[in-house]
Image (cartoon, one colour):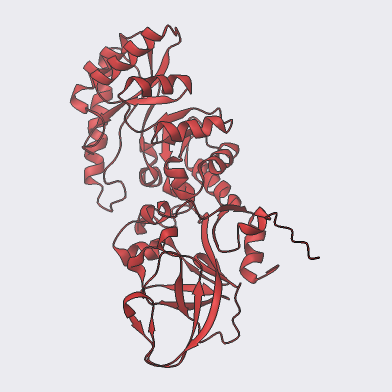
Length: 400
């Protein structure tokens, strides 16, 4: 009688269809490169919101804190709670808005540090904490709007805002900060205007004898552009993950992409001239071609609008994607690789041999930004931590 072992090998299943590789050595390298830009007194906040831009928040947070980051930035309370539940004790700045009693209680319970943008918000925090009976003071960060027109108190009202929060015994000002709207532009005029406004607001506080314990205004681009913008802390997102915020900033430091997106060939077939491929027959073969079906699609985060517009890497060669990208699969013209077999690895983003495809390449085709590409990869793609040597072996086909 035949016996079947139906216990799944999860380590193997992680790479049986499609996955995202996260190179932790590259991540550590990027943090170290960023730290070299900063004065010893300037701290580095790694922005790990949106699941660390799709890279895996807990894994990224643990790595960056081991290699020079001292703060973490998140957008939502659940993102902060996830890090706390993973045992991470570093200070976590909540960059998004919080306005309800439940949110205030959660912030206090999980020792997150909220951003305050309005007097009403500050009063809600103070009243809720006072009612709770907790005598501890909560560190809060006051955000000024210097021209982003997003979250923040108008910079002209900084003095009144700081004075109000200072009078609330439940709250302790941990920093005052703002955010640049155009730091990634080659034209620095708007960034300089915002910086001037920030400096004016801080100068008004100094006149009244108020010295904020910490100031910060730099995102990735500003961190790379000008050390005078570093202040006490820089908030770095994209550059942490090895991408430059703008073409003119490439080469300012040596960044290495952390993410690679890979999938396996699931079937290989020959189709004849005149044969349509995929939904809507957006591609019709003009000759006999060898088609490879690959187990990844738009439900995994491959934008459907890339259909018939991208190449992928296979055995170090570029091959074209053909036909409409479907929910779970896409097709390639692999006529140049006649001995291709199911199970071979396709690199959609990343390096294979001497060639590489970057998130910036997709962003340029789609008329968007690399941030959106990185954040688009869905959670059904396992995030697999790799060392650089393991990533190289994978590219060379070792152990396939």
